[in-house]
Structure formats: structure tokens, C-alpha cells
Image (cartoon, rainbow, N blue to C red; front, top):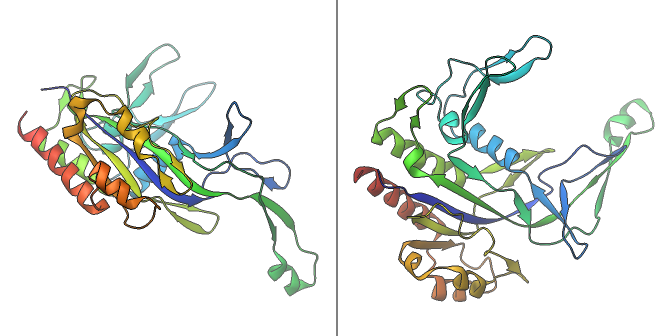
Length: 289
């Protein structure tokens, strides 16, 4: 089977979608800092993975707590990629004892979704005064950091490794490999995240990618948003000539101030058409191998 990689970089818009441990009664967003001192909020790859598995519509793999002195929660020994796509996509490590473990690396890899607009310290003041008033008590008070921004993340898939697990001598038929990737792409197209009473829409507003002979997440450091514009020239400058014919792009019409530039220079399609074409590329790959 020819080695092929599917990669795509996605821009979506969300608000306060991943909190960390918190300090006192202040709920803090997950953040990272850059050299210029600016802080950017992010949604961890683990959080995105959780949402994908939760919304995939496939049976979740069984887990167990194993170990003698210290219990480790892990996938059960009889759970395999044969029955559970999440193991096929995101891999596993199953420890037999303190020195032995069975591993399969992730075939679907995700980056963190990092905000394109820096965090400025906004706080939301919270109370439960509605409940407190019912019994004439003083309300509880809390605060939560808030931040709304465009976020960018990248997904990369080793298509030639999907449906194969040498640990259990398993290889799925190409029809099942195709079905699983198509199901994954459908999930990403309609991805959302429930947090603190809100449902944040993580569906793509801009997306670029394709199926390539290399497995590099090509667009991970190329897609940037500034002043409500996708920086098209940055993207074009990073696409190798032999990759241009395999690259597709999708955009929500009118969302960005330079939609016309995106359409003209990147041949952008609608988001639904992008996913339709990408799934066709996946079907062609598996049918020809």
C-alpha cells in the first residue's frame, strides 16, 4: 500500500472552551505565552480528542483499573481496533505489569487549538443569587476568565496505517477503513464542545488540506488570522509546487473580510464541498490499494 497522509488545518471561533485547575474561586482558562509576553488561550488536543470520540457515534472501548499498589485506568486487554474505532484512531497503551506494555501509536494526530487573538484578562462575575434569594441567604461568588477568539488546530492521519494492528495481527477490509475515515471527517465537520452550560460550535469556518504523498502537517504553522483576515500569502508561500494540485480549501462565505481573496487565490469551496471532495479522495485511495 502506498504511504499517504491526510492533513487539514481548521479555523473555528469559540468562547472560553477549556478551563484549567483554577486559583481560589477564579476559574482559569488554559493558556500559553509567547516571547513577546502575550498570552493565548488554547483548547488541548486531549479535549478535542474527547469531543471527537464522544460524538463519533461508535461504541466506546471498554476500560479497566489494573495494577496492584497503584491502579491504572486503561483500555481493557480484550479491546481491539477490530471493534473500536477510537483505538484505531488514537492508539493505546496496555500495561501487563510494571515492566511490560503493549503499545500502538496514534494514527490520527491532533494539535492543540490555539487562539489567534491574545488574552487580555477579562473576567466574568458569577453568583447563585437566584437560589440564595429563595432562602434569604447571601449568595456564593465566583469569577471565571473569559475569552472569545478564532482558534486554529491541525489534524494529520496516516491513511496507510488505519485499520492495521500488528500487536493483534489485525487488518480491516478497505471498506471499513474508508467508512471509519469518512465518519471521522463527518464528526469534525460538525464538532462541538459542551462547557459550563454552553455548547460551543467548533465547526470549521476556514479549512485547508488534502491527501498527500508526505505525512507532514503542512499547514500547521502557515494558517494565521489577523484583523479578521486569513493571511493568504503566508499560506501560498508555504505550499510546495508538487502539492498544489492535491490541496483543497473551504471557507464560510462572508465570515472573513478577505473572502474574495481566499476564493480567488486558494480556489476555496464551501465547507460542505470541501469535505465531500476530501472523502472522495479517501475512497479513491483505498479502492486503488
